[in-house]
Image 1: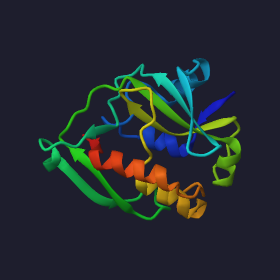
Image 2 (image 1 turned 180 degrees about the vertical axis):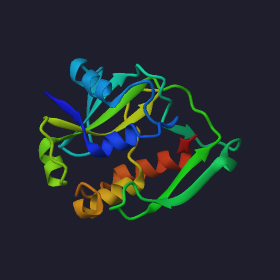
Image 3 (image 1 turned 45 degrees about the horizontal axis):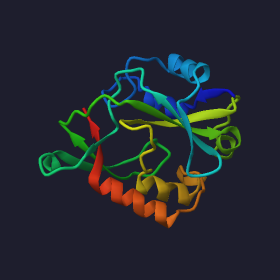
Image 4 (image 1 turned 90 degrees about the vertical axis):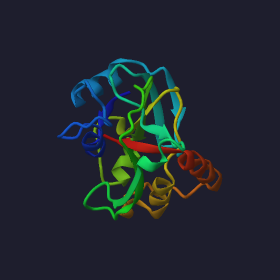
Length: 185
């Protein structure tokens, strides 16, 4: 099985100007090489048949992706309308500023198969393409954000995958994201 970083994931996980909330202490090529050379700790089914999650012990200083919302840090939550790329419509996002989470124990790499990436207009030569990565304390997936589920349901032309919303998964997502938020340095 071969794995490559998609251009979408490369710019999000390894931006030109490195940030504290992206993958640290590792180049994109080294990351890709490690995914191909090292068997994952676990393989989880993703939200659709074309999606798999490879769980690897974190070998970097990358910090957890999310922080629990508490009364002590709620005043540090920020929000804005943002797009992930120039082709997508902006959506409402929220994040913490001035909060530093612990170093993640696990990197949960989100993979799409070659056929799905071709359908989305992002063909690859490998069997699987990295579309994202979660940085977690536990070797588990964190729920996809509700807005990502909605974007996926809107279809490929709106930056999604074309997978309809699973109402129960959506409710679990809302429950998680009401109690947690991403962070920015």
